[in-house]
Image 1: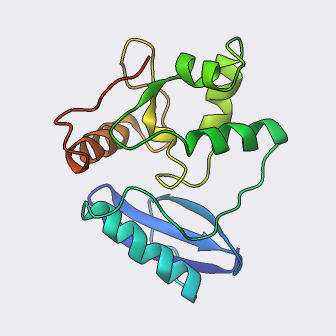
Image 2: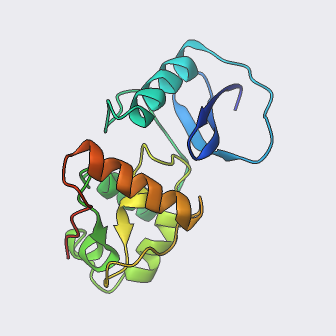
Length: 160
C-alpha cells in the first residue's frame, strides 16, 4: 500500500490505506502512521468524517481487499446489512444459503480489512450480544449506537 490518510475519530485514530486505485484497508491505529495521502484516500477520509458526523451511512469510493472466494462472498453480503438493523451470524448464514457455515462466516467477517465501510460491526450474536469485533467490542457498541441514532431508530433493531 502506497498511500495513507488518517482521521481522528471518537473511536481513536483511523487509517485509510490505498494502492492508488482502490481503498484496501481502513482500521484503527495505536500509533500515528506516516501519512502519504492521495486524492482517493482524502476522498475516503472526507466520507468517513461525514459518517462520524452522522451525515452518511454508505460510501461510494472504490474498495478492494484480498481474500478467498468465500471471504469475498461474505464481505459482499455484509454490504447488504442496513445501518441501524444489525443481524445475527445465523441470519447472515441463512441469507447466504449456508446455515451450517456460521463459524466460517464469522472467521471471514473477522478478516475484513475495511472496517465500517464493509460493515462487519453490524453482525451480532443470536441472543443480541456483541461478539467478535477485531476493533474491540466497545467500538462495535459505539458504532451500532451511532447508526441507530442516525437512522432515528432509538436503538439498534435486531433482525434474527
